Image (tube, one colour):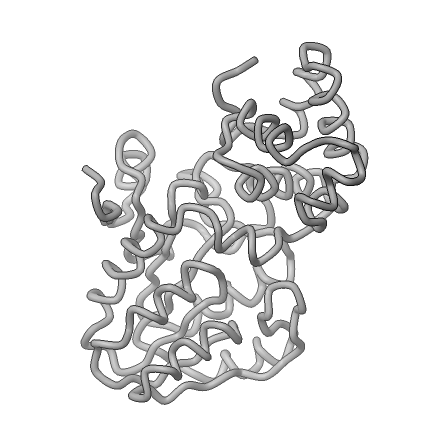
Length: 281
């Protein structure tokens, strides 16, 4: 059994390891491969009920492929499935459960970068939500976001003017999408846009699960003078999906991942800031 399949094509890795798995783990693997969408959408209790197995066994299965638990396993499963042309977004709960300490460090570092900005455009996503929370000590700003949870957290400070661009709501992500969003963004200009990505690659740039989200995020990038990308270590070395933009459009990337990956990004001309989680090195 490999020590880690993080960053690999997870569905291919599961298929390759199937013969070596115990019968209980093989049943979980078969479920993940045969019906990835069901595996991604259902709770751990429901999965275990379907298979007649226990939650500790399910977690042991996820860890055998190098994941801390079910949430980050399912995010990688969704990426692998999407790379096969079947986009299924991970649950918002799974996104919020992964690498939380690193996301808070990234958000705090990024909030300091925009302290003097007057207008800010913010993407949706779990790190963007934490970033919005970190804006409480910054000067009042005009903020537009495509994320409903981001808007709520920014508004809670009571100091910022918060706007939504309109459009259709994606229920799972609670994010706005559609041509209305792109039309509104085309008429506006912000000091800085803060975006995330589901995959960051030195060659392919930024990409995401859904084609419509890639269009919206690209429109956000075009509507700002500076582009700050928030990307924790789980976003590197993943399959490239729908391309948002190349790294030449990125002004600053804030991440918790140092080492060769950061060096590759710097070699591509990106300013990379390392935000170590509290208690980290």
